[in-house]
Image (tube, rainbow, N blue to C red; front, side, top):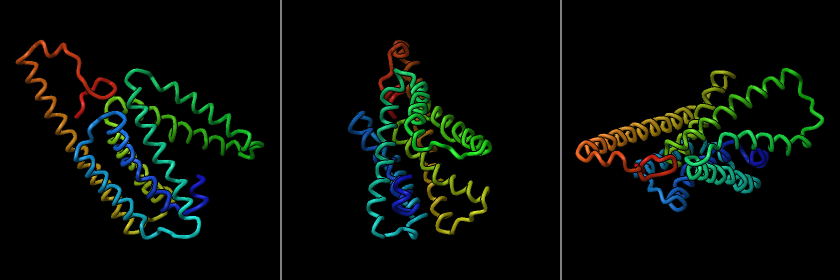
Amino acid sequence: MLALTLTTVANVLITMSLSPLFTALLARFVLGHPVPRRTWVAIVFAGAGIVWMYGHNLSGGSGALLGSLVALGVPVASAINWIVLQRAGGRVDLVPALLIGALASAALTLPAAWPTTASAADLGWLAGLGILQLAVPCVIAVRLARALPAAEIALLALLEIVFGIAWAWLGAGERPEAAVLAGGGLVLLTLALNEAVGLRARARDDDTQNNGERRDPAAASRPLAGPAGGHPAR
């Protein structure tokens, strides 16, 4: 929100699209998880799609650099968040932490928002957004961190930018430009191909593991080594 007061939406969104890259690098050096080549390729193409969507709207005014630097805190914080979820999600149930974080955020921001001028209808909309836009997606993300590598989760999070445009088009009649549609299509195609290849690789690994267990029954009782949550690294 602070970055949006300093620079354009395009600058902020393109900066935020760096999140998968930062997450992949942190996962490699902090967790020691190898990032598949397909994920690196997907990160590059998805980032190119975001730039394509908003590149023509980039501004270079006096506040552009400062706003972009402030916005850079979003992908950095996001990358750290995914790494923490990946590291601790398999040992600790982090869902209660979401409630603690929400209460702490409300307590810290209440003085700045008081006295409130929101109507009952406004509060209803805000409550709905709090549940559907924040609470439910955050719980899903915490659970998802047990099953998918951090870099892939961050990559899938780029869908928020694409679907945000789609909802504004369908709900508010904000028709996107051709470049936005083309860039969004590239992002969707890249993510779909990345997940399709990933599913095939996981299925192939499962078949190999099952065949190995049939040849060596004792292997079934040995623990699997991999990222948090007990899932083998693929």
